[in-house]
Image 1 (tube, rainbow, N blue to C red):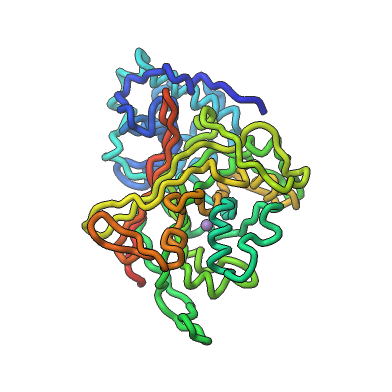
Image 2: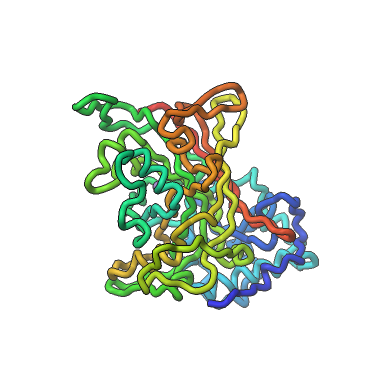
Length: 424
Ligand code: MN
């Protein structure tokens, strides 16, 4: 796949909607989401521009989508799945049409009070119905750090790690939209030096700084996606907080891997940024050594330069940025993940979510979890208000942000935020 150029990505484009320079949502982005204004029953498809949401159902009412050759009822749905099912050609046509409609001088401006809602006025909802959720483990820095802590006497990386994009099947049911409160999970933990487990609220609650892609094209059972086709099966991406209970995880994960330590919640940012909008930010992935098997070999650039940040905000306190990482550090890219996922004939469906795994960089300020930032509780993370943390405390809020920036444009994801309430 050669580098695409999309008219909607032209950095020279200007909208009649005022967008500040540091906004994640200029006219070159146009991410898709589900929003409501008065009540959740009205949830429908919107596109973000600056501090506003453009109502695609209303654009359809005004007959402004007449050249889009598909059933416009998809814009009145309360999830994006039916729209995504229409296929890449139609998502692209829709984004290009919206770009035209939002440009300075467009006729749409006279309808702006009808089609644009201030972000303060809307409630955001889960953008897709997630059928299946898979979590990878694709950052070599993260896998190495965890290996050192969990298996101090063995090799940090297990022998398969550089050959397979390691992953596991997670729970789709507990993926929630940004702003949803999370209750501290309870479960079995093995206290230090004990031989028998106890039942307790998690004592080592953590976040995982991840990104996830949303499957945009289904496959039939028995079929595989080749690596050159893989990105055509991806609709877009969100920032993903994969909340983790480290003490529950540590006791349960051998021999079959993560279970209740992970399945209690994951939070996502509400706007799905398309791969098309991210096109200007493609970068090469880290070199893979040893060479991977043929089905995982790829051409061209399949990684993206996306800055990532994590804030921890205590109840009533000030936010402290405790990690700054980047999606470009990923050892395994999304095309390789999806190719590997389907190589055995496992089918994928529109709306499925595949998360990257914790994204850590080399530098210790770029670690994507508190497990790494505090090095399993040996170190203290200092907060601006004088507080200290090793893991997440009750009533802490975790906020993650993602954005791409070059000299001419900023394409961002906004944020995913979640507050931890005491155990139920
Ligand atoms: Mn994870």
